[in-house]
Image (cartoon, rainbow, N blue to C red; front, side):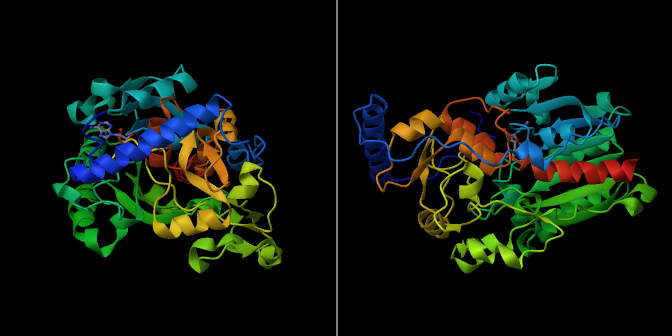
Length: 395
Ligand SMILES: C[S@@+](CC[C@H](N)C(=O)[O-])C[C@H]1O[C@@H](n2cnc3c(N)ncnc32)[C@H](O)[C@@H]1O
């Protein structure tokens, strides 16, 4: 994997040994379970109720051409496609991301690995060809879960994204990142690296979106910058309005998953966002919640197959009887490999749904790598709403 995306934590040899032992033990238990020699399965194979395709009705092609940088497994790309945009090309340094995109859309032009390294590109070849340039530069330099070194972090690619915008001069651009980048800590960074260099050419709006506002069953916020070259288009621009109500699932705030009977307090003009149990088709246990923010598996001390992001997240997963560690590659394996506490074990396709990816969009790579791509992605239904809002302003 590229050093641009992965940075191991500084661990002592003793800590490393603990991880090694735990991982060996878990591999042994898993192999035993998959041979049918483990504890008897408790949970039937789940049939999800949420199909994220239904959160992004496909719109007719609008003639708009998008160029995708830092494409990952294509959260933004899929959202833009469903909103009617065509793609000129996609760039990502991770080979596996390139395979994911190519397998799902063989007709797309995908540059991955060294060919996809944005730092090596002269973008002027795309001048006058691009309507919307979109990208989510790596979030690790800013994420509250990391060291927040910002411009001191070698993975900081925002200057590269800004360079691409200025070299291409698309009609509009969309940039996305973690909420921390909109915090006071990074206000100087945002002003100097993003907004000031672009201000002479672009009229820029900045806003925060929550994935559950668009029916994605997860606590996940992202900050967006949307810029237009023409003032009139910028004046016409309206940021996406929530389509779904999720207050009945506000587990993160109350730390208590809420009784389903509170459904009656919803705003009836919006649709109701499913909780994660409902979305995955798990039996009704009287409580449900939005899934806690899933972590990106491409950071951390080892190639983790856990999507756990914090201690408070663990409490929520426990209450809704879901085991967020040792995610299985598929549902059959999750079914056979019973979690120690008897809770429901997640699979890669389940995590895809939690992040708003339809099952028709397969994510390539070993489990840790597939989870890394999923955890890094913009939920496609959120991307779709942003793409629709941009298309409206450009029309
Ligand atoms: C936050 S993810 C983007 C997720 C994507 N926007 C989506 O919605 O699925 C950042 C991506 O930047 C890629 N990346 C990091 N350094 C890069 C570089 N120098 N050139 C191209 N891609 C790079 C990573 O491999 C990762 O897939």
